[in-house]
Amino acid sequence: MAALRPAGDFDRSYEQDMAVLRRPWQWAALAIGAAVALTAPLWASAYIVTTANTIFYTIIAVQGLNVLTGYTGQISLGQAAFMLVGGYTSALVTTHFGLPFPLAVLVAGLVAGLVGLLFGLPSLRVKGFYLAMATLAAQFIIPWISRHALPDLLGGTSGRIDVPVPVILGVHFSETSQYYYLSLIALVLTTLAVLNISRSRLGRALVSIRDNDLAAELLGVSLFGYKLRAFFIASFLAGIAGALKAHSQRGVGTEFGYGLEESIILLGMLVIGGLGTNLGPFLGVTAVVLLEDLAGLTGQKMAKWFPALQARFLTSFRPIFFGLVLMLFLIFESRGLAHRWQMIKAAWRLRPFAR
Figure (cartoon, rainbow, N blue to C red):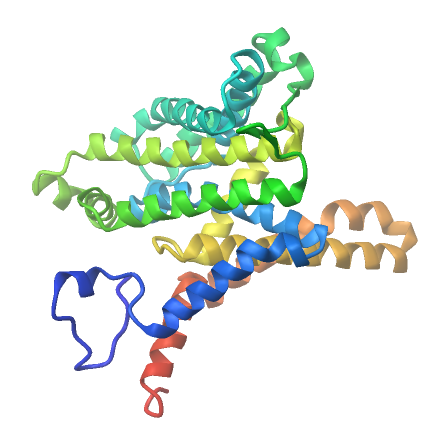
């Protein structure tokens, strides 16, 4: 989405036009944010660090979904299943092959990307609702395989296996405050990669497919090739997120939240943040995670007020709250928080004439 700028505010070079940070206050905000992120484990509580760690690897998964759905316009309901593939792959290669943690995460992304290619094959013939149904198959097939295929390797009917503590250069990242930095580094790298994809020939081709696939094909864009690339990138990032989640939770399996509900929540995070925007995954994931925590605390309070309905409040209040928030965003802010942020910045630059 192009930024709104006042008349007369124009660029004089290609570097200025492609700059991500355009003003001194943006560089200052980046420096302050980096300082807070790097020092957070030193002053923040364990709850804040754990929540931030969850937000980091969830953003990576939503970034992949943004490439597929936001940029390319291909709806996917199997992102959590590809995270599961990444989690299993990282656990197996570190346990049985002794691969170091960074290499294991990379292999997990590659394997998840290849699996995503298989489920992306129907994108040549179908799109929209029908493609969503095709990707939904991944959400049933992959967990079934994890529970019934190779029981000695994948944990059998429970589908759970333990994941070792990450070790890099002899340092064991066993504490959440230590693992926090691994997730932060991975998020920085994936963010830089996605930023470059969105500004490259590949990104422009994906956006053209989203806007008008027939016109894109007439202009020489290979629909099948670029759609498969989008599926691979989305699944690759989901695999990295799944590996980070598995090592963070010291285990991987269907009981750790890789079901259809998780895929829908990831898609809802992207919608709330803003489809097709680089800022959308950050805003959407942060908003939903914090709102879900607020919903959990509210459910606990209401369970104390109504003891007879305690079990229902504890299990049902959070998904109901998420559904209401998503519905309100679709009604009142369908373009997401990123668009609202652009409007706020434009109004500030155009003051006192902004309405």
